[in-house]
Image (tube, rainbow, N blue to C red):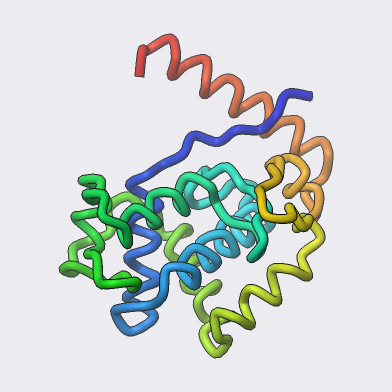
Length: 186
């Protein structure tokens, strides 16, 4: 069966991070938002069969994360300039992220927003450290011993209870989407 690879949507990831920040009162530490985005993608896979962001997942020492989003958000708290789509939603603040200005979150569907709100509600009373401890209990996390280990999307779908036939169908759909996108030259 082909590996499942949803297209990563940087605009959706930025909107999702902005919504989680808004729900968190306007700011939160980077690790908390990265963890909540991973947990939202996991929840979305379990309930809708597709993630919010389409990220590629990895196990890291502090638990699983979406790799592309983590890299983009790390850049925001370093000296690197913000990527444009992220700059529209978030601003750099020492080691914290905050909403730059509230705009409509155009890249998120109503279902995406529902998943993000449910994820926030589930974890809002936990500290970042408690969320990290929680992600260490997830069956897909493996200790990478200072590195990172990939978490395949089809493996994660199996873990969250998606039937093998549905996973195979999703693999065919995402392979078709990749071919279609390459054919268009996008």
